[in-house]
Length: 265
Ligand SMILES: [Zn+2]
Image (cartoon, rainbow, N blue to C red; front, side, top):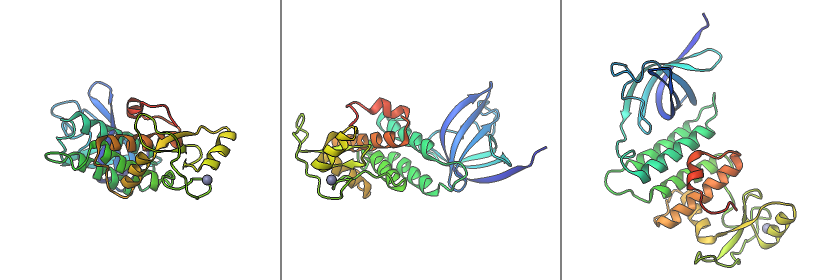
């Protein structure tokens, strides 16, 4: 029999899938052991030790074992540390939280310490579980998480100056539908562009669009920990961050497909 490695600690469920007739496979992000895939035997049985403990959004305390060389682990015990009931009860909170989980699922690297990601995701879920009105629109809280994630991944787009030459990048493009002044923007070129670098990027075959300056600055603000207070700014800041992440992660999380409405710049 192969040796197994035992571990325990705080965890957040990122995704759940049924396994056999009564079991679940959960993907969790742990505070100290990165992402793990764990089999929860009999989780759907009322008498199971895991019944009611493996819900999305809650912070859990888990004990598990994994094969020495990685692969599907075995969940051995679990308790709920923080129950977050207000998220599934509200569609806006639920969508933003789900999007956060999917993003974390996408970027968490097996075998790495993902403590910062765990802390960021936990902070997002805690904010979305606020009693009474949220401190900011749900998408604004999400944009704050996304902006931090972009920064941690070294992917934060240029939002004020030009991504290529570092010079000023004036918002001198015509306004669309009352969006205010717009600046050239290209995900492939690293974000906001000055007029001449936008021209170079286009000539090099990159897609260059325009984004409203106020939306770029809303994402910038989110990156400094201040979620946009206005619902429309919050939506746009999230949209820019999500598209940029989609482009650079080369994959499209399901919730982003649902959120994305305008053509990709
Ligand atoms: Zn430039």
